[in-house]
Length: 110
Figure (spheres, one colour):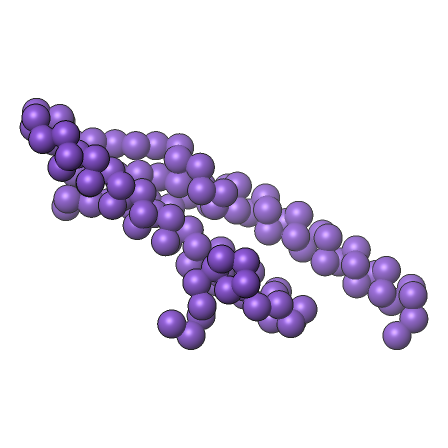
């Protein structure tokens, strides 16, 4: 393989990574807990863009319950983000011979 081909491949990889980062920023994933009483929406960059609590939940004086439901909703959304990103990047990474689990993504074989 010559230098020109390597440079062309490097450019394609950079473009694909930039596209993947843009897609991750646009991705929105929802996690819910307590039958939908707590809901968290994350981007593909794991940024919380929405947190919703059912008004009935807010009437509760059980602070620990509310915290547990928000935490569970967030964790569910984070797991969904990881799976979405693994699926979207999986084919690209396989073509490069990269193991995504080395970067904290869930193992596809689990």
